[in-house]
Amino acid sequence: MNGVQVSWARQVAEEELRGVLPRRWAHSKGVAERAVDLAWVLGDDADLLASAAVLHDVGYAPRLAETGFHPLDGARYLRDVHGADDRLVRLVANHSFALLEAEERGLRAVLAAEFPLVAVVHHARPGTSAAALRTGVPAVAVPVTAEQSFQPNSVRTGGRWCGSNNTPVQTLDVPRKNIRVSHSRE
Ligand SMILES: [Fe+2]
Image 1 (cartoon, helix red, strand yellow):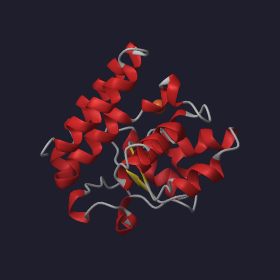
Image 2: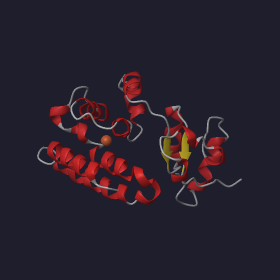
Image 3: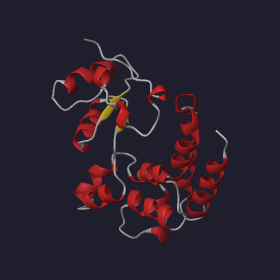
Image 4: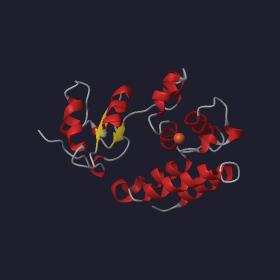
């Protein structure tokens, strides 16, 4: 991490959130700290994730509310006002399975057109596994507990799973060597 993009991202997020939404700002800082823990996996993309983490909820800032859907409002702000990195704005736009909430708000087509979601990486908990399937894009499961290690198999038998041994990681925007995939039990 060289920290340049992260410093910029933190400054933008702080300006938009700290004064009007202090708890949201505290949350954003916490998420950014967790993102730093993943730097060893991401290599050159560590800055990207840390920046997206601290900015992910910037769209909650009242002055940025355009649609009222914060992932979309935040991503548009970063794209249109700051000319931010395309991958960064797509991470902000798609955080927390935003595509699914967008669907309920009648904004799925808008979000998908402006900020395409190409893949989902998740921890294979039952709820997240189901949500990943509903997005309709390739998913990579990275189980973190014994219970979760069973999820990839159960989901894969549903016929749409792209995790585990047949993960199409070439569709991701990060080098394959930087992706660690936990294999499910056969
Ligand atoms: Fe959010």
